[in-house]
Image: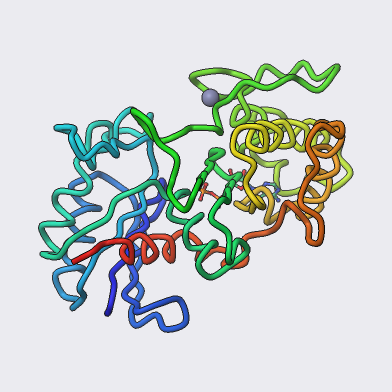
Length: 288
Ligand code: ADP
Ligand code: ZN
């Protein structure tokens, strides 16, 4: 079997053609501009490739209810022009094969479980801290969902004592995304100073605290076997991973004990490929 995977991101989209992670036959990148232009370019790529199933891992929020009239559409994104866009329809049409559709982070979580830092687990979470905070939460081998997919990056958390930063989420202010994602760093220190932030800057205590609170909630809600934490902020500040785990253990305060043997929080083993390989992992869930 050969699969096509499309990861739709806020700035770029990646399409790959692969039978699995070790053998990527083709890879093309398309900038995310208008829906017409971007989806048109991806549809063009897909119509040139030969494959048996398609996986689409999209930024969101997206409608994942197959019974809904807007299944496969992006719902309420603040990204200009994309709210209400049908993503699945035109790509499935161009591909002409069965397609699976899910969030970018659920796809990445499934890819990490198949090939990366969550290998062998049925219960796992993938957290990315970049332009936003996204969480892919897998329970019993399946992405958690109800009337919508979960949006744990937007939970409200107990604030670090003394931290008065208002937060940068346009919807909630100081939700986790508003306290820890890239735009919150920009709001705190200004665009030009983010890249120069030292590892011992006091701001990281607040960021690590918010992410530890997120992990506390994930542990209490679903008790995954491990949590992968990646994205642009963690990539550039790798010291955060251990700081978050230390704060998580303190926050749980002995009420729940994390599985022993390996670090509970880990970097995604697939690195920057977790997104596109997530789309391949989704394609593999399609039963032709
Ligand atoms: P996306 O979520 O769009 O895929 P990334 O995961 O690539 O984005 O993360 C991009 C974010 O990484 C930006 O919002 C930026 O603020 C942040 N970032 C870039 N450089 C640094 C740095 N040196 N330290 C901390 N964060 C950084
Ligand atoms: Zn929010």
